[in-house]
Length: 256
Image 1 (cartoon, rainbow, N blue to C red):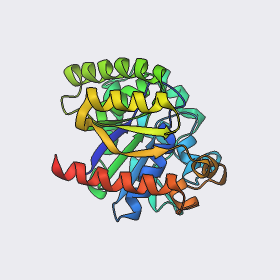
Image 2: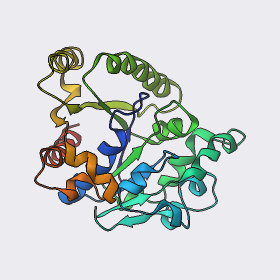
Image 3: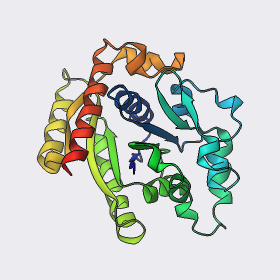
Image 4: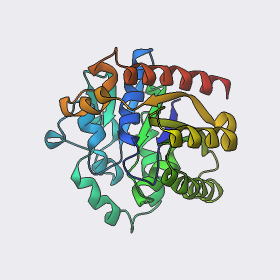
């Protein structure tokens, strides 16, 4: 049975999609069977995995509305060596259409139950807002990975996200917990980055992953080629950091 994790942060532009795609590729490189679920209508994770979102026969939209099952909708990222439940702009319509449906916040959980025996990890890329889509992700997951930049505004948004996770845990998904905080786009030359990093370690302790993802040009270039950064330039510091993060994830899950 797969371990299901949301990569979530209510703040935009903090590297959620980059983290999801590269963690999927990093885990695949160390022999894990991975499914990436794109829950963002922008479909950036789909494109970042090398899949053309304009040519999809089925997507997360159809899966959530019960028009297709996960086995039919998933496609394989040839370059990343993992499977993807892809998304495109149609998914934005699911926000409205889910409102009147039964068990609307558990649609994704039920859909993933059809395939979770085939994977070691299922990673869910959530949109940057507490929407019905994000709620579906949180209800389906065993835990949340929070990527965040080490800057002041990120700390402000973190407290809101932690409160949201607590509410979902209390009311909808008792299995949900914070797996860890991942420091991304880290620039050690900035004093503020070091100060915020130290605050996170002080406040959250071992919930902060040891791996730190540096600010890296090659990681930023990779999506335009439709290739995970881990595969685009395996020698880059960013790629090596994500592979190390994948190994740390496996180690952390085994010790839980």
